[in-house]
Image 1 (spheres, rainbow, N blue to C red):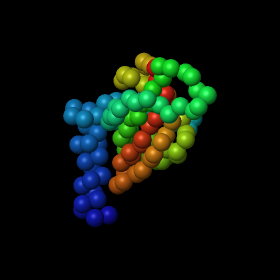
Image 2 (tube, helix red, strand yellow):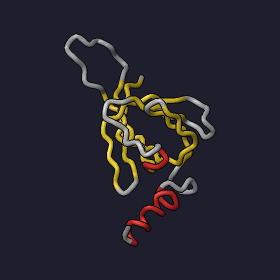
Image 3 (cartoon, helix red, strand yellow):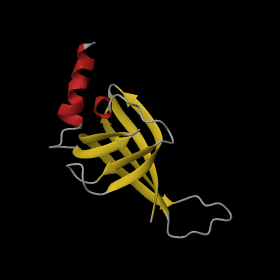
Length: 122
């Protein structure tokens, strides 16, 4: 591995996911596994009106899109697959409320996962 790639690998936890700066410890459930208190960056991107079919008359529901960033190694080396369910809690320690999302996009660059998440919310 090159010196640059070694530096980036160290920086994933020491800088990008450092809980003193950007990261927060959250529990992530994916593919039947529970990853408790892993450092993540969860960015709430936007809430917008959802696309409705012609015979869909439900009101008050919105499409929420978030982005999850975490180390590939912290998610057991698994790259989340599009369309799969993923749950994230709202506090450290494995408790709290879990929000359920589905994976919209998923990429891994140099050991860092970038997972686009979607959900329908009130």
